[in-house]
Length: 181
Image (cartoon, rainbow, N blue to C red; front, side, top):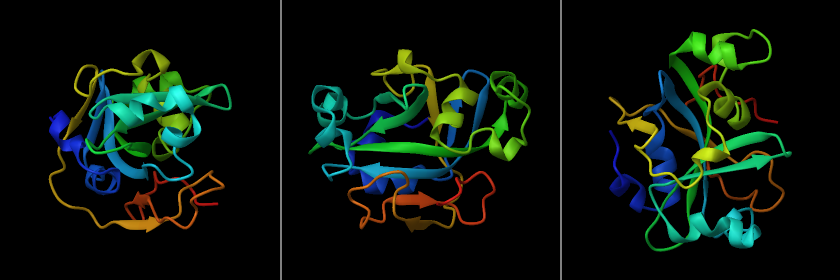
């Protein structure tokens, strides 16, 4: 399993190197296929969220889970010993616990859509705000990747500031990757 030392580095590097790793929570898991990096840029919670961005500024190797639209959890891993950083896990390709993931969804959907997008990912894996601040490896675990996948980048999704930074990383042609709008 990946240890906290893996996350002591800058968020952009960690975001790329998480692609291809396996994310586990309970009996459910899958291959990470899409991530986004955040540091001290204008779209970062370390800048925008004041006290709520404290985990990003002061820790590495922890889960940072927050709500968007008041109802969807988003899973991030804090990074960097030298400054603020976190990696948003945008999507996984489900490989284990598919029945558990399907049971958590409000309606049946194809496997490649179960954890496409950060809200669906957290719902499928059963990750919520109660996980915020936990050490990686406590309940949410990561296995290193076996091989280095091809990696593409683009602007991050759903932000208005910092769009010039190509800090969204994904495995091209992977069906579980979010649709870029």
